[in-house]
Length: 232
Image (cartoon, rainbow, N blue to C red):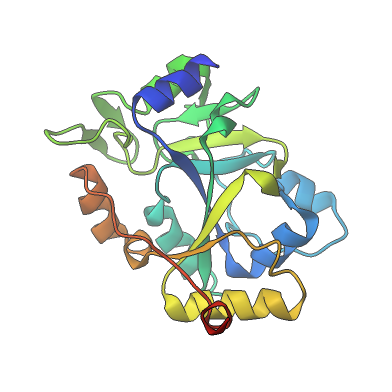
């Protein structure tokens, strides 16, 4: 077991998260891969970038977060594309932390084009430092859980392609979106590839999510059961 993975598990970290537009989910299922922008840009198949600015300068990496999504980033990215407002959170296997070349940034790396991203245990532990200065200076106050980074926008940068097999679930905002995702992918024969759908409204509200996790409270998540399954 890698040092990073061992420390993550000791902290109680159970999963990683990746935000993407709902419109990209079919492509991920079809290719059975989460591909970094650098790879997508050279492919013939179309994609809709989640972030049209990419001030992080790390196009060959896929960006993940610890336990819960970076909803502060989501609010900014969603505001730049009014035509596609549905987003999903992919939860991923924590073992990805052991990926060779994985980098860790204690704050949003768009601040300095990933200059603060570091490899290995030192980089990982920097996300949990007593004080982190990104856009603002943040501190670990009393009650801050060991599994949550000091800065809500701490990032994990995974190089290359992530296989669909690493995805554990797809989290959506509400029941209506869950029904739509299930119907859409069933229509194209991809329902069998779709990881379990989970409904968790709080994960899409930056203020509510931040207050909750910084005090050590995990937001509720409800597995989605399709009406077709209930009818059976």
